[in-house]
Amino acid sequence: QVLLVESGGGLVQAGGPLRLSCAASGGTFDHAAMAWFRQAQGKEREFVAALSWSHGNTYYADAVKGRFTISRDNAKNAVYLQMNSLKPEDTAVYYCAGDPFGPGSRNLYAYNYWGQGTQVTVSS
Image 1 (cartoon, rainbow, N blue to C red):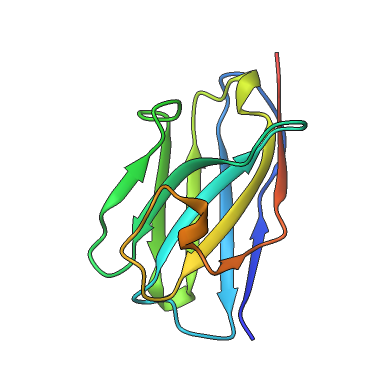
Image 2: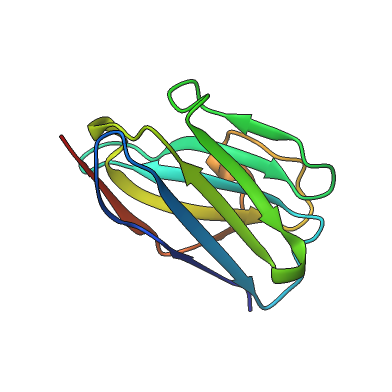
């Protein structure tokens, strides 16, 4: 049984920072590809960022490049998303996703495990 639990969401003013955390349990994710996706109300879930836990390669959606940073702490089985210069259009439920042996992907179907999501609301 693998669980991913997100935390750190909340309300933030435009331009501000917010850091999301994803804690993994029930298995080791030291060789896993991890990612963040987001889904705004009434819209499709979209890719945000991905990280190869094996080699540290990162991938970002164009909309967040230069503002968001994905990182990991294998000792804690955790993944983070540092979000800076937030915009109202970043408002969404953010989901953590994992693939224990995946290389990393922008495709949500590559990921086997998902957290329940954490709400991020950016006010203007």
